[in-house]
Image (cartoon, rainbow, N blue to C red; front, top):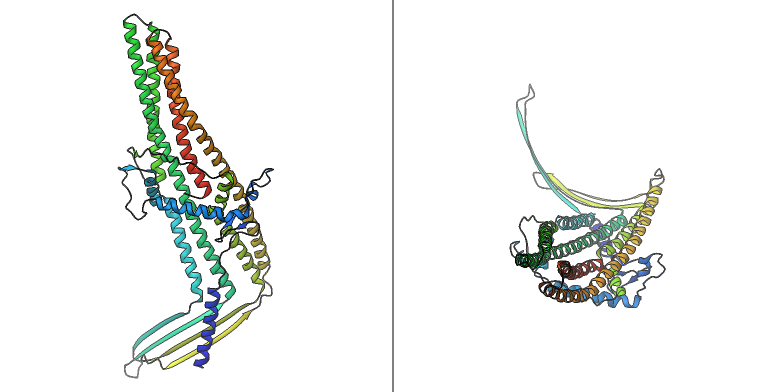
Length: 489
């Protein structure tokens, strides 16, 4: 009997281990998408564009090289980042954009929640795998009884028992295998959601970082403009005192000065607002200004729109998470259909027990069973129907996400090109406006032009500097947004 029990235990255990080891690995997208060399999925941009008349197409033969290029660039970008295990920089130090990103990823409540979701999914997967493992227990009991039942004399007695039990029960092996596969996909999905959350935080930090830099630089420009107007007011007043200029010029210069002082006050308040925004994105509280490195990430973007779109479909965590959700919905549909079929149960148990801790008694139990569904009050039918609806909903969400990705990449690509084309034009405008201001100052000092012409030249120069500042920071922000839309960092 013991040999038979051992043989059955071995068969059940090997069957469970074999089914566990041969779990299907998560595949890429359905047949309507292009499979890359590493199992990831690249959708065609035609799917993303929906019913647009002019769709951008990506050759499937080019998908794998584009994905490899994207992975190489991502690896190089990660290698250039500071060591994640290094201590976080102090908020009172001079911070780079990478410093702010590290602080945000370490402190953001959204990132922490996503990390906890990954840990929870890992525990759930471990619990699902535990269904194939046997259970064992040991129990012991010491009993003492003292009793007196007249007319008999008082008596006492004692008893000691102990038992050891081992049990292995497997019911619905295919259901257990599907559950493990589902939980594996859920763990993958949680990791993708974490990556997507981190990408969003990184883009938000860069946007807030450059917005604060722009606000700080605006204060510098407004201060220079205020000083210029102050100098012009002092010069005009001196000319008036000498009888060379009318009173209206002094009044106009004073109005111009006061207006620029108001603009400077608004610029300083904008710095405080942007400081709060950056601190909030970083997950910290800050009432003092940040000292930021004013280096702008303005590296040229060399990819075409088609290449950027292909990388977005290959790399974006939310796209890959959507494909995983489709797989989970397909497994759920198969699980619902399986309720129409019989359920088999295999099990074995062995126990030893006895008094005085001798464990002289043993018991071996082998059992097998089958449950055949006959009528379930339409619960199985409705469950299958609901699973089909859920699968259709997941497919529709996946198509909607593909369209959103196309639009986000397209808008970010257009914004980046606009900013790139604006920078040289703005630089040329600043040079011309500065020359014009110098000429206007000279003509005014010589009495050739009036205060209105000088005012126009001063406003044009200040506006040109602000336009150049806006163009440079718009490029940096657009680059960060395009990288987020592509699923890279």
